Amino acid sequence: VHSLKGESGVADIRNFGLAAAVDLVPFSKPGLRAFRVFEHGFANKHLFRITADTIALAPPFIATQKEVEEMVEGLRSAIRAAKE
Image 1 (cartoon, rainbow, N blue to C red):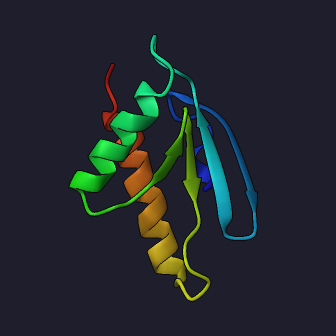
Image 2: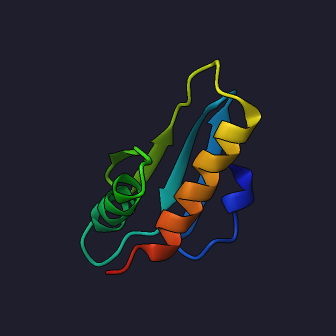
């Protein structure tokens, strides 16, 4: 998930094991950027949990490396697609 560092709109990334949080730089309206990320992800078969402008990730412990990589790439795509 730390490969998202440097993406436009990403303020901070933190994790503990497989659990991670990606803090986004807010748009003019708090929570709007994360909601747009959620919408794009959902439309592309990814379910991201949002709280304000934070995306929470918690894949199952049985997730394969490939599945985690696909989740992160889906999040990258959603972050790039989020427009105000």
